[in-house]
Amino acid sequence: MSDEAIHAYIAGQSENAFAMLAALVRTPSDNPPGDCAPAAEAAAALLESWGFAVERHPVPKSLVESHGMVSCTNLVIRQKFGPGPVIALNAHGDVVPPGEGWSHPPYAAEIQENWLYGRGAAVSKSDFVTYALALRALIATNQNLAGTVELHFTYDEETGGELGPAWLLSEKISKPDYAICAGFSYAVVTAHNGCLHLGITVTGQSAHAAKPETGHDALHAATAILTALYAERDRLAAEFSAIPGIGSKKLTVGLIQGGINTNVVPDKVSLRLDRRLIPEESPETAESDLRTLIQSAITGLPGISVQINRILLARPLVRLPGAARLAALVCRHGAEILGEDVAATGSPLYTDARHYAAQNIPVILYGAGPATIELANAHRADERLYLPDLPKAAEVIAKTLRDLLTP
Image (cartoon, rainbow, N blue to C red; front, top):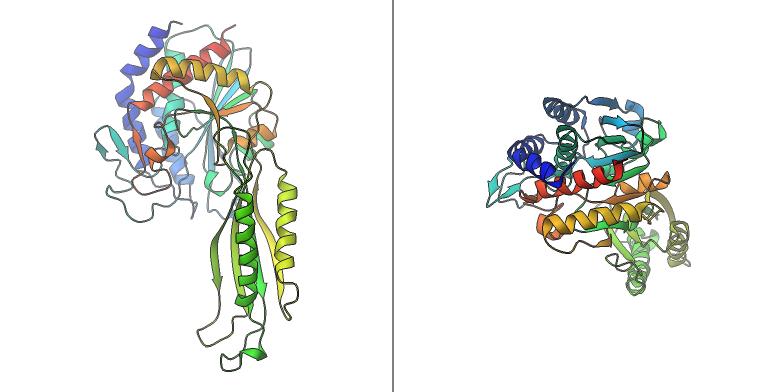
């Protein structure tokens, strides 16, 4: 299959691709609240209009609710070209709520100066289209390939991916040999940070503010914990990963709740923290160290207890044998098509790619996106995708798949 044939087909389908992306953006799929089955059904109908046979895999309701969602359906498309490796392409259709500050309506898919604006435009509904267009190009140009391409379109990345890729793999719905997951920029990501979320509940005893000495101030104790955590944050900021693009260890206290009223000694304060784990460190050790730090901070404070719960543990992505080949192909085709160097690097974010790696499946991240994730306004107001990047990314993926599946 010539490069020219792939390029010509994708160029001829670009307007259809942009229309599909706009339709996906116009279908809200906020998570939370996570009622994503209707959005999956809308996406399935769009993909069927492109000629794909779409498998719908609803996740059991009890499991969905245990993860704080309302509904979740995963979509799988399988294109078998012949005996050979199975390559999965994964993107997620759930999105964070839009929030405030938009200059374009978050679900209007407005286009201005070749940028399409809307929640999910970059992360990662664009790669529903990138991957579908790449697969259509392989089918349409009639290459004699050996292997299978699967599209995994999932709907719970914003709550951890346990109901998406992890569920598809654990249920043996898919058994890929390689995987490529939605990307954020021109770079090819081969490693990324992990993430630990802890919930901390500090309990004391309430009292009238006129006689605070008769109570046990949970906020006072929480302040001691915060002081220890912020000192730990400063220490972690000096410990860097050796992998380019990863940066240092991070710690953020993102949520604080507590108290009864202005004139009452607080009896309970809750904190939630986010600890970003670099690929070189052990998540178990990081969690144990934090638990010890928190307990030590309240030593000597009478009437105070603390409960620590793990809310999320997303392990770091580390490169597996076989991922280097994927990365090399995408970097080569990306450089040719984009006209600039495309390098393999790390990312400080965490993604669903880790679920493939956990099953020893070599995986990288690449898809439509601007030069940097900041240009896309990902997870911020006015999220956007530069439309000319989409067919370029599809061409990179199509040529990479062709090379991997050529007998």
